[in-house]
Length: 178
Image (cartoon, rainbow, N blue to C red):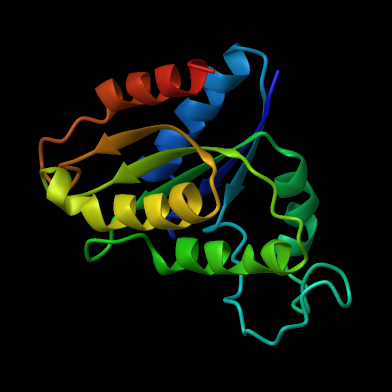
């Protein structure tokens, strides 16, 4: 069975991205996978300062939640990036987390992984998530050569009649695929 890290990039607890990542994790656990969910709303990660202290005193010169997460990232098989879409892109919280992965890259300890995405937008249509999808494709698939294991896109969450329940089932199934 696989070890999966789920990174919830929403700055809000209990909202759609949080609910979807919980459903994903439940689905993955139903197949016997070990799942660690990391909520950037509950445990903020400071942005990279590009101090180039990577690996000189631990993984990073900043001693925050990332220090404990680096070994988990190194040893996991898959990372699931989940982010609401703010202004047609991932949240600042998710970008800070991704930038902090630079420490592993500098240290030569950035192993290949499988990757899934969960993108949640208030607006309708794929054009809402295109920028975020392209970013992940450019960085993790094309440059770092991770393996694309799929994407779950949830659109229209700003609508007054939006019902997340069908998407929770999709997220559960998305987690149970592996």
